[in-house]
Amino acid sequence: KKIKKYYGTGPSLFHPHARILRAVDEVDLAIYPHETVGLVGESGCGKSTLARLMMHLEPVSGGTMEYLGRDITRITDRDLFLFRRQVQMIFQDAWASLNPRQRIGDMIREPLENYRLTGKKLLSARVEELLELVGLEKAHLSRYPHELSGGERQRVTIARALAVEPRILICDEATANLDVSIQAQMVNLLITLQQRLGLSYLFISHDLALVKHLSDRIAVMYLGKIVEMLDSSALVERARHPYTQSLLAAVLPIAGEEPLRSLPVLKGEAFYDAAAAQGCGFCPRCSQAGDLCWKMTPRLWEMEAGHFVACHLIQA
Ligand code: SF4
Ligand code: MG
Image 1 (cartoon, helix red, strand yellow):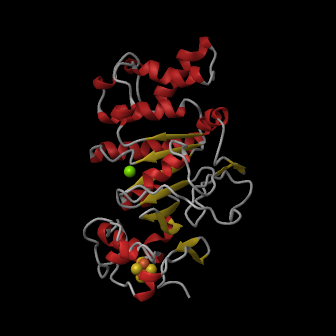
Image 2: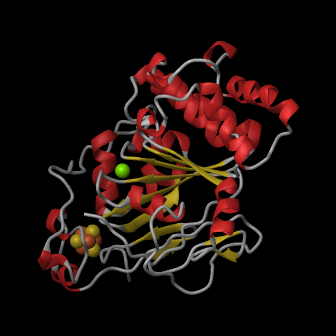
Image 3: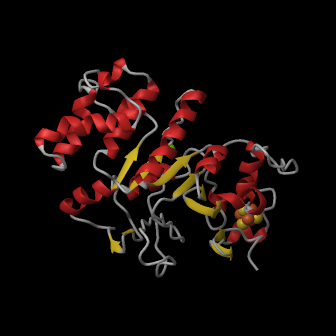
């Protein structure tokens, strides 16, 4: 099921000069310059919808989004055009987001022309520069998507996204369909690009180990809500939400860290339970659910600096 409602709360908790993009359900999800925020959760938990709301690919039905201190919840077409220069997105399925009848060179040239970013004379040079940036070669310019490998196609979508010099890149399961070795290459490419271009990422994945590897901060989503948010470095030691803990139990041991074997591994998929509609969405799968859990939705609460949890067990 799709979550379409996000409700804002109160003033921003964050530094007013930070680059902020918010799409919220009882919490501000802010993305700072040069930062990677990982958004993790099972498929269908609302991660992609959240990203689509941020990109204005779907209308927001409540709440607010801000970019650089400006409310962008509702924006004009003109402003949206400009906003899309700042925030770009790449998807899991590069194949579906590329026009099969368009040559790679033309694909990358298109945004440069739409935004009039480069004079005619410099267009070809800029296209080649972008190809080089993502590890492709001049020979790829005249090829069509079907002539490329999956990894190469994903590089093309990255080059095209970077053509407009965005500040934020949203990666929605961008490495999910690739072989493990290709996936590692893409992850390394994303890290290199961040260092070279000072990008911020919202890295969306169901793969907690991968998210932990890439992210500075991690937001855990369950049925449309962020249930826990904390520094990536604190994840293994400090994560408190039963859902986060079960995700951890499923992936541990992460290299070099103690496995938390006592944690139950979750089975089955996330599902809505009408009985839990009033309470915590995780009730039907939570081994620690008590009476209150079924009656009242836990609020996302800052239990320690920078560490937010929504669970009745943790609230005082
Ligand atoms: Fe489990 Fe209750 Fe916490 Fe929800 S609020 S995660 S049901 S203990
Ligand atoms: Mg998705």
